[in-house]
Structure formats: structure tokens, C-alpha cells
Amino acid sequence: AQSVTQLDSHVSVSEGTPVLLRCNYSSSYSPSLFWYVQHPNKGLQLLLKYTSAATLVKGINGFEAEFKKSETSFHLTKPSAHMSDAAEYFCVVSGGMDSSYKLIFGSGTRLLVRP
Amino acid sequence: EPEVTQTPSHQVTQMGQEVILRCVPISNHLYFYWYRQILGQKVEFLVSFYNNEISEKSEIFDDQFSVERPDGSNFTLKIRSTKLEDSAMYFCASMGGVISYEQYFGPGTRLTVT
Image 1 (cartoon, rainbow over the protein chains, first blue to last red):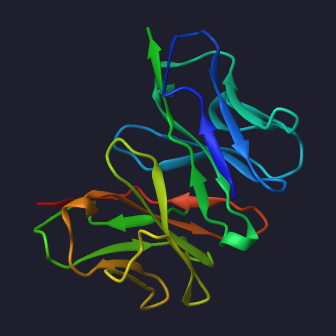
Image 2: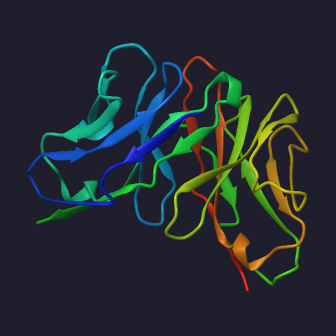
């Protein structure tokens, strides 16, 4: 079965400093992995996805993530945080073809950006 | 840009009442999903729908829940007799196909059962 673990429930950074949100996954086969963002009182927006192509994936708003099979990790990074990045971030794995492609969510990391 | 829409944005109902949550997926998409997020908890899968039938459902999706795609555009989630523990944000999502694996989410319906 697929699962993801987000290692930090809260991350606080100063504006202009780097962001690192950590995620580890468990999968019995090569996974499809995603990061979604949820701003307050908004829906879920896809930031980026990994589906077995390039291991370094670039997403929207300057975010990127690197798939590391040896470490079973898919950490999300951004070189310089902006106030508008404050939100909840979810690491997500797809259940795959055998599981109707349902998404399995991590517990989320709340990113706080200090001025 | 095409988007998934959901109505209503907020629904308040009394315990034991039936509710129908409505979703309009992106028009050429083939796979449809409902997820829910209880306040302070993670997003959980409820049900997937493809080719006019349920393809998978979670343990949460018991006999009180049903889904329909009545007219080729709407996708509805019905809860027959609501319980207090059904209070949550319900998200609809759609996916075009299995090449991109991208699911697009609606803004959600906040269901409050009193």
C-alpha cells in the first residue's frame, strides 16, 4: 500500500529565506507523487508532480521537488519565501492503476512566513 | 482556464437529514472523485467514479453515501441520513486521463451537521 509521511506539522521561515518541506513516501512500485497547496478557505491547488520522468520537478510559483528513490523522499523547496506562500502544503501519492488512481494525502505542513 | 466547481460552498443541516453536494467537473474529464477533510485532519478519499460506475470506495463510504452523474455534467454526493461526524469539508476532483495523473479539485463544500 502507498503512504506518505510529512515530517513537520509546522514550518516557520522569514520572508526571503529558503523553504524546505519534508516528505517521505512508501510504495510497492514506482510512485506518482504530488505536492498540493491549500490557502486559507480555498481549495487544493496542484503545485507540481513527479511521474517517473526527471527526478527534479519544477512547479508553479518557484517551487521544486526532488524525487530520491534511495531515500524514499520527495521534499519541496523554494529558494526564497514570499508572504503569499503562507498556506498548508500536502504531499500526496497516487494509489495507481490498481487503486483507481485515488490520491493518498499526508497530514500536511503549515508554512508560516514571517515578515 | 477550466475549473471544477462545487455548490453550495457551505451547507448547514440537522442530524438525520439528507444532503446532496453538487460538483461540476471539468468537461472532458473521465475520472471523478470525492474526498473529505474533517477539521484539523488529513484529506481522505471517499469514492472514485469512472465509466458511470463506482470504481473504488473507502471504508467511510458506507450505505449512507451514494454518488451519481445524472446528466453527464454534474457529479453529486448524497448523504442519506447525516450524522454529527459527517461534518467536514467535502472536495470533488476530476482527472482527464491516466497520462497526466493530475486531479483538479473544486473549492469544497463545508458541511456542518447540528
